[in-house]
Amino acid sequence: MGNERETAISDASVNANANANESENTRENTKAFVYVGSYTDDQHPVGISLYSFDGQNGELTLVETYSDLPNASFLAVNKDKTVLYAVSETVTYEGRFGGSAAAYAIEAGTGRLSKINQQPADGSAPCYISLDALGRRVYVANYLSGDVTVFPVEAGGGLGERTQLIKHEGELGPQVDRQEAPHAHSIVPSPDNQFAVSADLGLDRLVVSRIDAESGDLLPHGGAGVKPGAGPRHAVFNADSTHVYAINELDNTVTVLSYEADAGRMAAVQSLSTLPEDFSGVSYCADIHLSGDGRFLYASNRGHDSIAVYGVDRDSGTLSVVGWQSTRGQWPRNFALSPQDAFLLAANQNSDSIVVFRRDAETGMLQETEQTVAVSRPVCVRFL
Image (cartoon, rainbow, N blue to C red; front, side, top):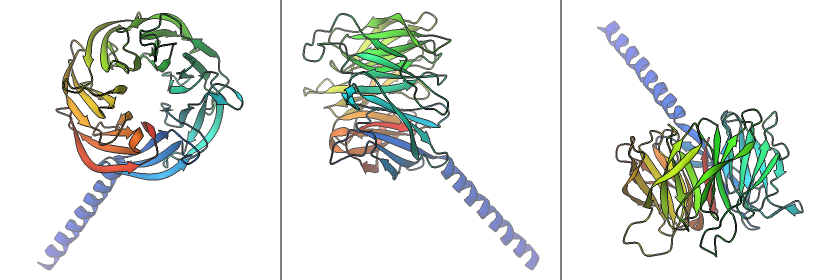
């Protein structure tokens, strides 16, 4: 009996240790890093903040802050997760016209940043940054000057001197106070890296460029218009490259566009409001994302201060309203889904907070958690 009892205790101890190790490994596997870009001033100089993220409960823990880049209003990470790119949304840089973009090396295991270099964008108020799928080019949308800057990526991830500055041209939208000139607000490459789409708020147009297979440069190709006065801001492709979803800042709508991947052509097929029918206040759309499984679309409202949730018909690509979730803050400019889509992080610019919501994978709706962090004027959230 004694030997049996000792064996049972030993086995139980081994199992307990194994379970503890498995639990710890699971916890480690759900950890991630989050970068937050912020608007800055003399009293609030931090442009980028690094947080660790617990994928089990959604907790954010501050790791480090960086004050060397003013108005770091949009961030992007390369495919290898070794370099973070950021815009500096200013109108001058080192005494010359336009803002700038910077590259930071990401330390493996810690997420910490060290600056590689910074380059002038030669466009005013850069507000969006992205990479082509091969990591050869970095694209920057300059809002005030209405153009797109193209940078080559050098060995080690640094930014070379710009190779292109592409001016948007065309008929302006009818809202004279906001559409008095072209305003490039974003640029995203297609999943197959054949084309790139830049949403221009001033032109009411999604400007399409072909990505040169040899150089990665952008070549004129065409585009598609949205409803006059809509003011397109951001756009996202679905994984199958059959549809593009554009969020329109000025008329608070989402436009669904069919997309022909081989030809780089698109056409609007549906437009839905991002606001409830009974809302009568002032609001402006901001950001848009699809869930990883493509079943749900999310859009942020600044003013209504909410995330709109839509169901996506996988056959037609069209949308149906699921509901709205308050962001528990003011002016949610940008938001991000966690790597496994279990959480959504909303950046409330005017109430200085990142609020974490748990996502229901079946319904698409968001549920409040107790997780929130204070951060000055957050405008971009990016997971590593």
